[in-house]
Length: 402
Image 1 (cartoon, rainbow, N blue to C red):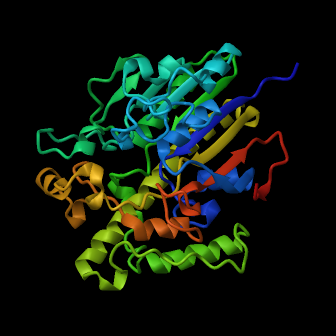
Image 2 (image 1 turned 90 degrees about the horizontal axis):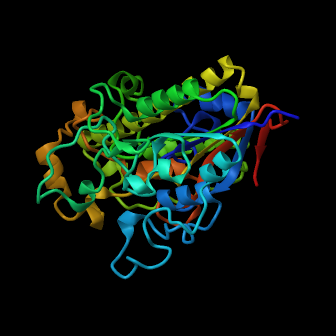
């Protein structure tokens, strides 16, 4: 009887179509690039336009309304609250993939962002994962830094504290050297090393990177210093040419015109350009660090002789995040006042634990080109994402469009 394959599903959070090297990007992602070069790139892969609906479909194989995530819990309006399909968590009308695989004899492991329920009885351990370490809300500070919350705290920030749970126990205190991508890599490696070697495994590694707030280790950010000083339009054209050279889009494709939702690069002051470019530098560093952690997991499987029997799926949960959070209704009108009081978003501090920035619609449209718009829109820019398969037992070299 042939050995049953292992499964490793890796999910990036708000990663754009051309952010990794194998999809035309300039960011250093050697581990994902290697998986793609020796596997299969999916160039016409689509998701929901936002994260938790995609996650619910990925883990159940059903429409996200059936699974209880008709929209993100954070986006529920009064008329939707309490309605079937809009519970805001993974409901009991669906069976989760880890539940099925556990019954079939697989050991089920998870380390990463959940975003499918905030209570212990809705956490991964309650939906089939035998071992799990997870961030329950949709976003959090990647270093676990949280200022004191009070009546002035903007609403959505209150819903994204660093709420972590391991198995059925909430984590009271994070380590002092905590960084989300590293922690998720560490925990999955721990679970893989401790697993029952007589059983195949299903491992789920959903990062919270590169979701805002944009934060990354300083030494990696430094590698990208000055790389984005020419602005998003220049980078957009550069990536488009690389996509064409790789054969991932047709040579005669004309990108959708940039939807101008914020000031054009040439209209910014020198200081504004520096701050914007620094945000993109940090974003790039987040993607690189995520790739490094993916490499650690893949290397371990290779060392254990398990890589050739492991089916790997890597994908993003939706298009790049282009929201102007300062104008996002869920944050309320006092977001910038609050951030100025509790965070240090000066140029030299951007990317550190006590900074809180995002990169906006122009940089997002670099990543989603040639498609239109970005996350939260049901346009190609919002739902067409990078995805790849790696399974060495199958002849999967190259890329396909469907």
